[in-house]
Image (cartoon, rainbow over all chains, first blue to last red; front, side, top):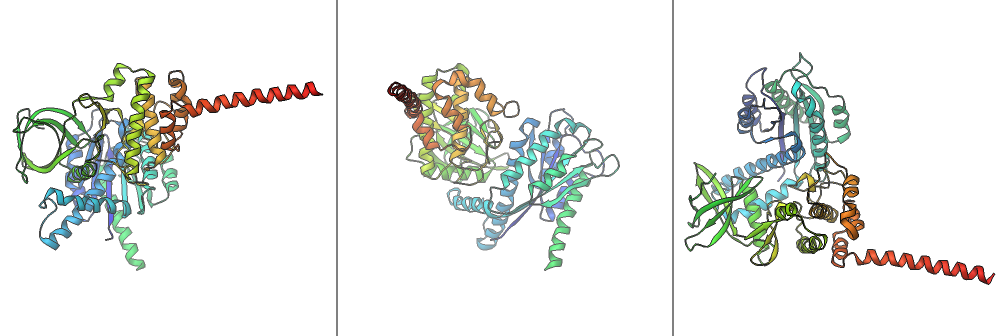
Length: 229
Length: 279
C-alpha cells in the first residue's frame, strides 16, 4: 500500500488579522487531501486558542497549545500525530469498503493488528509537509526557537525509511505581501537551513492567505508530476 | 474530565469502574484511580486517541510476564459527552515516582542501587526488541508494597533503529545535539545517564540553558567514581550493556584500569632506575 501523506502545519502566536477565516482555508485544503494542523504559542497572551482549535478541526489535523520552550517536542509530536491520522483514515475507509465496518466498530482487541500496520506504514510512507511560520511582529523573540525546532524536525525525519519533503512558508512577506515561500519542497536539510537564516519578523498575521498559498503549492507539485508522466 | 464518583461502563465488556481521583496525565491520556464492584483498585488510562491506547495495550500484553511493567486487564471504549473514548485498565501501583526522590534528595550509593535496577529493566526490554525511549523521573515508579521498580507508560516505545516517537527534551539525545532521535543503544545510555545525573544532583538540566560540558562540570564532584562512566554515557554512543556492567560492579573496571596504570608506571620507573644502576 503506497500512501503519500500531505500535511500543513501552521505555527503562530497571535490572532489572524488580515484576509478571511483561516479555518475556511484549512477546510478547503482538507477537501483536497491535505491535513492541516496547528501549533499555538501562548507566551504573550495575544493568541486566540479558538482559532488554533478551529484550524485543526476544519483541517482534519491536530493542535497543540504550548510555550515556546516546548516547540521542539511539539512540532515532532504534531507531525507524527497528523501523519497517524492520515493513515488511520485511509485504512478506515479501506476497511469500510472491505467489510462494512469502521476501525472503531471492531472489537478493541482486534484493533491491535491495525495499529501495528499503521506503525509500519508510518515508517515507510512518503511525507510531504509544509510548515507555515508566523513572522508577525510578536514572533521576533521566538523566531530562534522556532527555527531550531524546524531544523530538529528535519534531522528526526531523516531516520525514517520513507522519503520526507518539507517546504517552508513565512507570513507575512514584509508589510505588503501576504505570504512568501522561504523554501519550496525539498528533502535536503541544507536548502531549508539557508532559507531560514535570513528570516525577519514584522507585520500582520494573514494566516488565511498562508494556508491558501501552501495548498496551491501542493497542487502545482501534483500537476508538474502529471506533466512529466 | 471524569469527576470523582463517576461510574464508567465499558461498551464491549460491560464492566463498571468507579472513579476515585485523577492520578496523572501524560501527553494525550489521563490516568485515574478507580475501583470495581469488588472494591479492587486499578489505574485507568483514558484517551480519545485510539492509536496510542491500542498501541500501549498491545505492548503491555506482550510484557505480561515481566514484573517491571504494570499488568493490563482490559481494553475497552466508553462514550462520554457524546464522544468515543478508549481506555485500558492497569494494575494500580501503590508507591511514588522518582520525582519525589529527586526532590527529597538521595545519596550516591542508593541512587546507583536504584539506577542499576533501571538499567536492568532497559536491557531486558531491549532484549525483547523494545526500546524504552521516554525515560524520565515521572515514568519510573517505586512500588512500596511489592518492593520493586516499575516503568510506566508504554505508549511510545520504539523498535530498533526506528524514529523516537515521544520524548522529553531534557532526556533526549537529539535535543542536546549529541546524536539522532533514533532508537539505539546509545540513545538508551544517554537518557539513562541523564537520569542518573538528575538523581544525584536533585534537579533536571534544560538543554536550552546548558551544554553537556556544563552539566558534567557541575555534577563532577557529586558523581564521584561514576563520573567517567557518565561522561561516556552522555557522549551519545555508549553501549548500554557496558553502562550496566560498569554500574553493577561499582565502576570496578574503571578503578582497576586506573590502578593498573599506576602499577605499570611504577614498574616502568623501577626498570629505569635498575637500568641506570646497571650502567
